[in-house]
Length: 210
Image 1: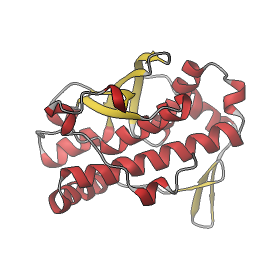
Image 2: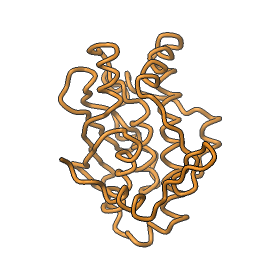
Image 3: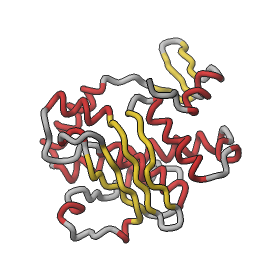
């Protein structure tokens, strides 16, 4: 049995999960439980209707919005950044938020702040459900998590980064892997990278608390 992440211990220890009058809160933030297969179906419909590039751009941007604002609120409002000044430890700690929301268990195999080069791998619950629902895929499917880790690295480095999924359970691989580095350091002409390029969604960018 895997060990409970520190961030989840903190949530439970401080009784930070509250259910009141039909609403669920974690640290005062309204939350909503969602069936994973519904999100998988939603993404598939978006890809079929709007195309992979447009669908991935929208979902990636929502991952950025969710992650960046949550990190800013959590680390600054609750003082976590002050209690964990080491950026590597803070990134590891914050990654536990993926555990809390049921996204899967992930570990950082590379955290190079000087070169802005990061690699995270683990079991994406979304990719597992997507594969179970729609079979083995030809393309990577974790658009939302890519946006989340993009925001996590940007939050701690201040750099314009791009997250690329290099291994995906939905494609039949044993784990999902994400590589994050500065956008300008990717070979954007590489066909494998071009397939995962996303455009900025202006309306989403306005909502991110940079």
